[in-house]
Amino acid sequence: MISTTDAHTIESLEFQAQQLRMLNERLSYVSALFPSASTQWRGPAQQLFDAAVHSLHRDLAQTRSVIDNAEQLTSLAASQLSSRVG
Amino acid sequence: MSDELIISGGGSVAVATDEMWGNVAKLQRAAEQLREVAAVLSIVDARLSMAHMEALGVPIAGGHAEEELHCAYAQLTSLANRADDVSALVRTAATSYGWAERFAENASRRVAADAAAVLGFFFPRWVALAALTSPALPVLAALGLAAHLLNSRGVELLPPGLVSAALNEYITDPAFVWALRHAVMSSDEFAAGASGVPPVLVSVLSTAGVLGLPPMAGQIQRTGGVVGILKETPVSLVSRSESSPVEAPHSYEQLVERIPQPTELDPSQIRIERYENAAGEPEWAVYISGTVDFAVADSGEPFDSASNVSNAAGGDGGSFAAVAAAMAEAGISSDNNVSFVGHSQGAGTAARLAASGEYNTQGLLLVGGNTGQIPIPPGIRTVIVEHTDDLVPATGGLQDNAHALLVERHAYENRPLPEGIAVPAHRLPVYSETAQLMDKSSSPELERSLEELLRFGNGSGSATATSYHYEREVP
Image (cartoon, rainbow over all chains, first blue to last red):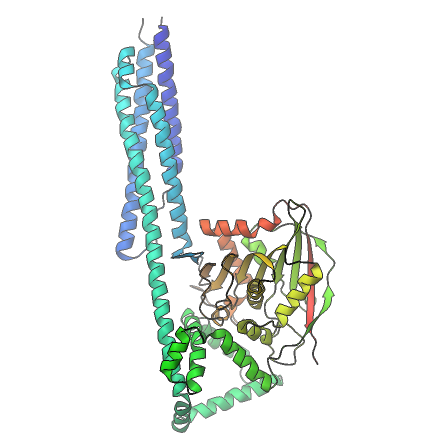
């Protein structure tokens, strides 16, 4: 039997996991807004622009991975809590 | 054919390609989105704090999730700031390039003007010397005269294919167009020098703005009048079509495609569309064709070379008079909102009508016109489209309407010129292709300008279009 407090906590954790999934989907749209390497630049400016754009893509992917991890940990906590018998 | 648009002006010195402006806008949107996601993440995180979870006995995984969320929030905030920084970097690059280009243009304008004054000052002696030492010059002059005389009798001196192919390659080169633009700007200094004014004084007069393209064009017109060419005459209405229902345009391409292209079957040079705004007041769109006849004398066509020179000189030429008369015929008052769309001479005429101050001009779309030295009032939303391989805009001199959004494209880059078509980059269908690219562009400036240009048709239930054909009254 799950206590009322645990039930509320599980609900909160599941809600958090769902919100994190949605935010990660939204970040995939943001990723599409970042430009790709440009043919419009030349010389050092091109290197600077391409490096900046590359690091934006890389760090956004890393952030999405962190949020994905947080979502999985949240789901795991909810699952562990629901298997606890009060 | 190049699909790259170079966009500049609009009150800014920045010069950049369509792709670069698109990147600036996208990076700004990305930064906004990242800040929104960070804000939502912060709210989600606040619902279950670490202390709260510990009190509730949430398993350790929940605590690790919290740590990951703090890390994600910091990364999202940093990403948003960096997206803004990269966007600013692109804008700074465009602005720096624009400053450099403006500096180079001003410097080359000054150098070309001074050189023209010196060349003009020594011109008579230089011609005499060249004529005496080079027999080729009189021969070439004679050939030119013969070509003119033979062509005027319908006899061809050279096969048109040979002339057009060689000539087209030359006059369609952007370097030639650039040189022509500067030569046009320096023609007044050259003339002043040739008339005996010392180069130093020419330079002072030029800097003071006493000399310029309009006075030079006026001088050409007056000189032409002495020998019976480039004379202005009154115009009169020949025909007017029945008014037909029309839908408001939705794109740059639709605006450009509505510019009349007079033919023998339909010689109308002017199309006027009448809309009604939400208050029930009439609003108008006036579309004006390009040059119909390049004749310099004895032409019944008001859209001729005389009108081109009149537009450059700042006078009311035949095309100006024809459009003004058509607008009066349509019932356009000085209070009514009106937008002009014109190609070639039609663009110059539209700019002159807007500059006249006689109309409540709200927007201008000027395509392939010689508008550079026509002072368009800064308050009018103006989009100027020029191909860098089209010599016609260059005949209007350097584009000095800095408030106008200038869209440039090298239309025949990376593809052969079509055979048998003189100055192909000047053709309306090629400008129509550029208008398509403008519609596809992600430039926020182009989007804003289109919204302004299309405002007159918004919410209009009933709209009508009427076409007008005018002729000169030849004495």
